[in-house]
Image (tube, rainbow, N blue to C red; front, side):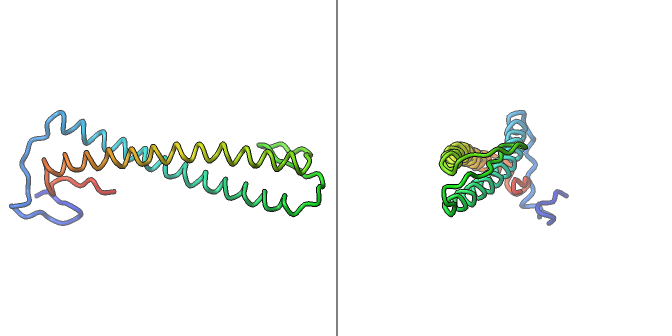
Length: 133
């Protein structure tokens, strides 16, 4: 007897529909989208942490008295003026924010497509299929 969410389905809830090729394609697409959604969410979280670090650095720069500061790029550090470091931070925030915006758009598109697939698949298979993460 099929199970849904760890519960055994009653005879009325069972669905004996045969899985067609287009159904399997939709299920596979949903799975790929779900994997990409997880990846996008991890990237968004990482970008938000990066933006927070840049914001903290900008705050520290505001407290400087026009002194030279050490700026880290990748694994290297070099001396820069407060103005140069501030400009770098502002440019980096803008760049990171653009990436974040694109990822947020992608996330919304994925969720929208998943909702469409859920309606299609739940309409065909009812409770016999579980598309919840």
